Image (cartoon, rainbow, N blue to C red; front, top):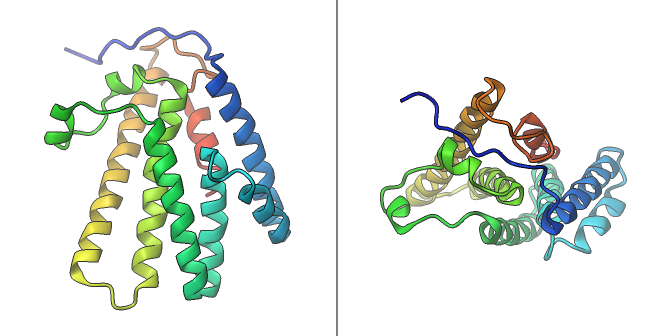
Amino acid sequence: MGEPALMNAAVDESPEWQKMKAAIADTEKGLALFLNSKFGEAEALFAKQYQQSLYHSLGYSAILFMKSLMTMAPEDIRNTLDIMETCVKLSDGLRKKESMFTMAYWTTTTVQSLAQMTTVQRHAQLIYAEIYILKALLTILADEGAGFVVVIKEAFNIRNSYLIYKDFSSFLKVIADGNSEMSIEDGGTSEELDNLTIDA
């Protein structure tokens, strides 16, 4: 039947998206501070809002993840995993809720379902995938005696994250091929992925 028809979408001017855009700019500032060795300033910037803001939570998780890899100190790792769990909860709360049928059959998001999401929901979906990758990697690396069950669980989380990214890749390809009138600001092009990988 060919590519699914995508919904036409106007530029997202919702208060939620405007607030998220401001958080993205703030997060870019925080990461710039971190990369310029201003670690204390970066942590202070994120610490103020990480419990309420999805992007501040992601930025905080990212810099603490890097710090934990450098120190491998148990206290740093525990703190980082706690912050990551906050990010998981924030992103999950903003994602589009899946139907019981979808959850029962372990199906991933589709191009059509991504097109029907709001800009904020798409960002939340990608951050959900990204934070689970970081969380899984840190959990495995930090636990030298990680049991088989732990490794399998985290591998499953990484796989689910990969599938989400794969779905977004297909979504962007459909748009790039001219099958949608969605605009850049609506989050339907690579700008959305650029915003979401600023911590890479």
